[in-house]
Image 1 (cartoon, rainbow, N blue to C red):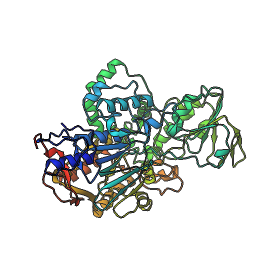
Image 2 (tube, rainbow, N blue to C red; image 1 turned 90 degrees about the vertical axis):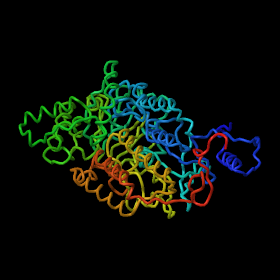
Image 3 (tube, rainbow, N blue to C red; image 1 turned 180 degrees about the vertical axis):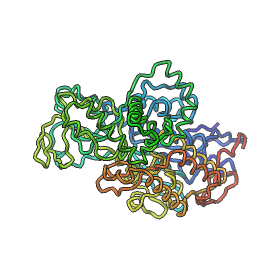
Amino acid sequence: MLGLDRSGGELAEVLLASLGHRPKIPGFVYGSKLSVAISLMTVSKKADYDAVVVGAGFSGIRTIWELVQLRLTVKCFEAGSDVGGAWYWNCYPGARTDSEAWVYRLNFDPKIKDEWGYQERYPSQQDVQRHLSHVTDQYNLRQYITFDNRVKSAHIDENNIWTITTVDGKTTTCRYFLPATGPLSIAKEPPFPGLKSYQGEWYQAATWPKKKIDFRGKRILVVGTGATGVQIIPKIAPAAKHLTVFQRTPNYVLPGRNYIIDEHQAADIRQKHEDTWDHASRQSSGLAMYRSGRTLQSVGDADKIRQIFDAGWECGGFHFQFETFDDLFTSKEANEAASEYIRQKIRAVVQDPETAEKLCPKYSFLSKRPPCGHFYYEAFNRPNVELVDISGDDIELYEKGIRTSSGGEYEFDMIIFALGFDAATGALSEMDVRGSQGVSLGDVWATQLETYAGVLVRGFPNMFLVCGPHIPFGNMPVVLDIQVKWIGQTLRHMEDKRLAKIDVSEEAMAKWSSHLHEAFEATLFAESAKAAGAWFVGANIPGKASDILFYFGGVPAWTAWLENESKAGWPSLDFGAGEEVPNGHIVNGDITIDSRQLVDGV
């Protein structure tokens, strides 16, 4: 019996030998029969692997599992030392989800819900990391992953074979390239002059060190009040001697109302899991939430409107925006009512009127993705916490701290940068990904960001985006599950029909792009997101072309788009056939052998 520890090249030689060719192979003795134990592999002289995945976070792990089920050979490269992706790197104090536990998990096998349960309504970074590690090990997926190895480039050749080069200079070839880098994997670097001159401690939240950081008795600055800053500030405030917060743009922070999940609720979550997940898959943002069936105008009465907002506020998290009034995203009147309600809540919680007004956004609610907070506004009532508005200031660092262009000078022992991410396109643009014309994906997207339903890009054959741009804006695990199932279905079609290449037509790209823009323009924040600096249009990154990074037509409409495509036989896609080899895979001018066609006793 031939084991699986041989390289692809050796296995190919053995298989060719079984068909009448007998090259010399060290350590191999030819016999009258060849029993090949490689039923889950395709051996090819053309490519090292059938598929290469980049990233081992949620999207990478889910993708690996799907590819293994298709009996494709898989290699995954991960820059970190463990699985987790964003949840591996973002281990700063207070890091946790803002999606509820029952819809923030891997879901490719029903057994997962029985083998794993989160501890809190909004799982902590540590708990999410444990979940991903547990599933990876439980399903033996770690064997496919090479850790501590960042991908530098990915180039496709005229034979539709991708060459993946890692930072150590090694190359790997594959037929299918699946970058699963996630929407929030490239942190915005501190752009401030003088950073090298600063002599204190400084950290980026998105690359937080694994060692324990001591905040006690220190003068600390947090730069940024987005989702990351909102989580960090309440956690370190009690330990700091003095905490200063630099804010450029305030956010509408929704209360999380987090709690421990006891054994009774855990049992209820498991029992209802299938129904919960099914509902989330049909909700606009992939959450287990329900439309209210009412608009602000349909209610009319001011007291009743207040009661409805109160109920959403007390429920916590995104229930406020999805279960109060259905027209918060489309009606200026309803949106302003919600905006003013939150401002009043801020003023009621924050005791100092001047600080409260600084924390009150002037732009419309939902122009930026609202963070989910846990005693965020309450932190500003502490005597050791100070809020500084730097909206009109430039800042520079010097050896002891920071100076502002308005003349302020601050000394700090520690600075924490919570500046957000180059969302959706950052990782793929940073990687040197080159398509069939030799042009980089980053250059293509710098001119015009286009995809086909967030999965394919014209001119980049056999590349499937996983959790990249133009997927629905919402809860990633639910969106991811739908996307990867469709990718798997498409790959199965290619394998069964022996199709060597997949690309997308120019017409199909244009049709999707038109639909994407139409869906975005139907929202109120189409007018305000850029001015507010929203990361979902790239407005938080200086020099980045502002564009629509996600799909705002909702998960059900996006799912229907993909399903209609596959049910109709993929009419929008261009498939290319290669040469068919008897009992083999299709290739473009080179032999491959499909081990699924081989049986004991060849």
